[in-house]
Length: 106
Image (cartoon, rainbow, N blue to C red):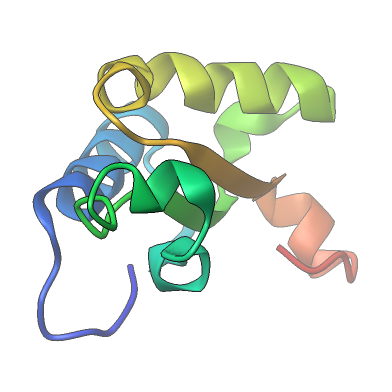
């Protein structure tokens, strides 16, 4: 996960659930919410809770044989609770170890 010293509850939950569901070889969770704090939807929530937009890079062999759409659905399913409780946007890069070894960037 991101190397910041403080992980908010949503960021921690995202990391914990992705580790539990996919046993990733690599996982980076980045909180991008600060880039969206001036958007109308965030302003109407008083700037939001600071945990609305995330980027996830994950490498797991659980994705073998799956299309990008199937991989994203697997991740959305694992994070359904967070998505129903204010997580607004996820930018996803999901690869297998073989794809990374072959030169594809996670």
